[in-house]
Image 1 (cartoon, helix red, strand yellow):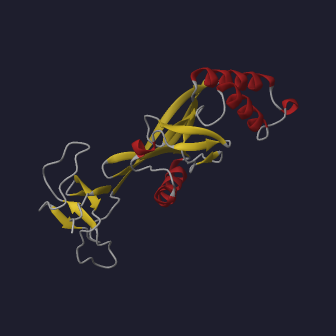
Image 2 (spheres, helix red, strand yellow; image 1 turned 45 degrees about the vertical axis):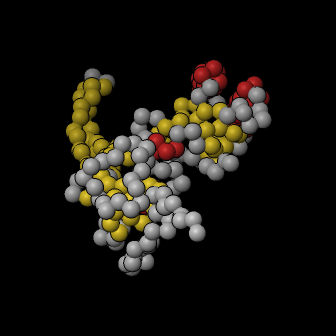
Image 3 (cartoon, rainbow, N blue to C red; image 1 turned 60 degrees about the vertical axis):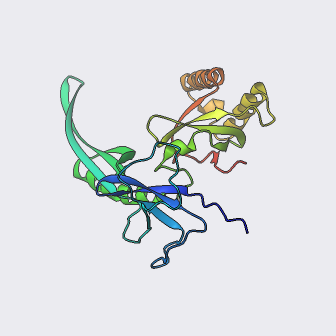
Length: 241
């Protein structure tokens, strides 16, 4: 009988003693498990990091069973308050702001600002707890955003893909002209669909209307919509095949 070849499949990373280690799912290789821990999850606990794209052999002695004592997301939250000044109307105005950075497994995965002195700080502390839950449940991978590059989505119901920006939680939208619509058809239909969600011309400021036209034309010429926070996804359908 032909023996099955076991192939480790990386599923996520964990930080142990301030070092990053990969966890693999190895179908057919099981440990005893504890407290419902998946029996095919193994930590590659080697001090020698493998090159990107290289998988460790399934029979490596460096594999140890994944344990409930390993926290998948190790957080470091940084709150920074600042007092600032601004010259306005012949006088000096003072303001206080809070900048919050959410680090997980040694990488910055989200950042935001707030104002209002201690009230702003307390708001930021509460928002962090909310964001931790939301990022864990959201279909976008905030923890390893590079995996989202090229992801097929629908933007206003139109075929598109995701382009991850420098800040991993911010994205751009790239039209997909290979899914049945030409470039001209795609942008014409987008304009029609966007108008259903915006104010009528009579309600809009003329300057804003001109700016919207410029932004639309610039995006069409570059085949790229400079969007922003992946949480602002009310017009995104994430699961296009």
